[in-house]
Length: 139
Image (cartoon, rainbow, N blue to C red; front, side):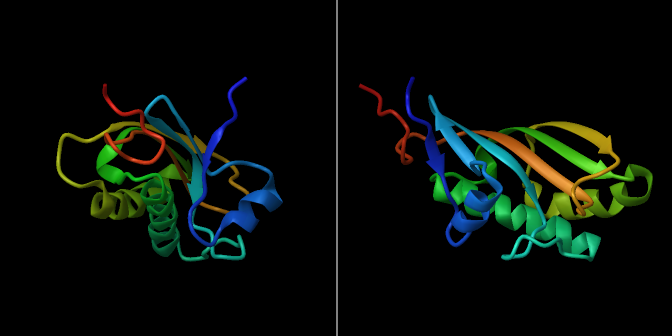
């Protein structure tokens, strides 16, 4: 079995080790990113929903950049939302600030009842650009 090529964002490795999962794994030119929430450095939830969603995107962007990519490389997005009828408009507004121009990635939204104290989580798959760390070079 091939060893997993794990990507850690700067300054958060201890948090991922404590919780026993990888923030992202590179494989065959793709980056599979674990769900990112609006957690502070100590792992606690940001209480304000709008700030929590922004922080989730900042945490996601930290991982994408550590892998040599950006949100522009994202091809598939899954979001998990607690109480979508109450929270969706706020979340959609903030997502638009990070989303960029069309064409947009695919999106699946799932309403959930519990996210360990969070209201929003985002999980993505990205196609890493040629020449990024861990990306195979064309012959």
